[in-house]
Length: 405
Image (cartoon, rainbow, N blue to C red):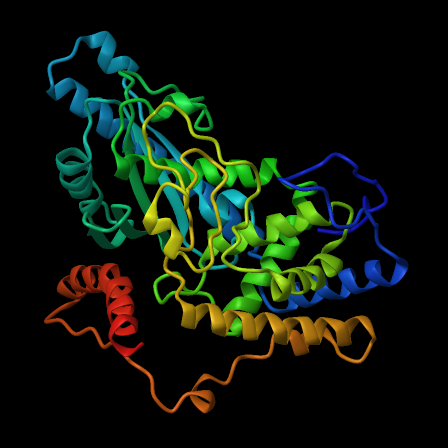
């Protein structure tokens, strides 16, 4: 945090176009940024040093568990003593934790990368699942093998973990695995690509913004705003964490010398005027020789139906916001207008930051809404059933939209 280094002027081009402005902050912008940062701290968006340390401990323990799991499997499969000694799996983070914008109580999105002979179906969802189930620190263990991105959800010592698995075509996974190298995509299937892409996209986002600290503060702010205004939800056709990160990163590219208060204001200015379905992209879309489909409305008829394309920067580049419908886009555009008007008033000293983050009055605005209640015989059944229902909510939303016009 802090804006002490805001005087450095950046002229390097970030992104697919020239910046809209190279202007740096005025004294008033620096003051407004300090007020914004103070508001974010007061709103409880930063975790304590104790919680941060606890997360590190949990990740270390998880790393050891998966290493032991792979070594045991290697031994059981009859590999040599040397292979057993070298056998390895790594735990990588992605999402808000890897981007450095997670708040207190947030889950940690994690990816386990294992060798070619350790598979997802039997080894991950059965053997590792049973190992985790036996540990007393692990509670609420919920496998969701048939989700779009297969995942195991659980709490480890009270910390929420979403764990994905990717088996890559190496016999030994090095501790310093370069996840950004395209070689990790050799001979893997689509679910594995989707699992790997969380880490790859997070790294690319951080590489493509001019100032990582300013990006983080702005993203924290916009994620909190989206939750307050009821437009933070991938499942119901709005936007999730990675979508907001990409939108904020693009604004950082367009205003490379702006401080967070300016970036928040420019965010609303840019996206109230954006002509969807023109895509938001941080870099040019590259098509490599690995054979995976990349977002291309000229070639893929399905891509032409996307309402609000926000393209991931790592190969294979995909539209991260394919759930957005005409109706949810309309709601988000109204909220961008709301944000734009408040930011103009803040810049004229006619409003404070608190006005931007007023909670959206959902029940006053909508007489009719759909509520999904999930009921089961006991807590264990509820976890499994809830996981299945949540993985199908996206289809339900799409079906409701298709039959109600």
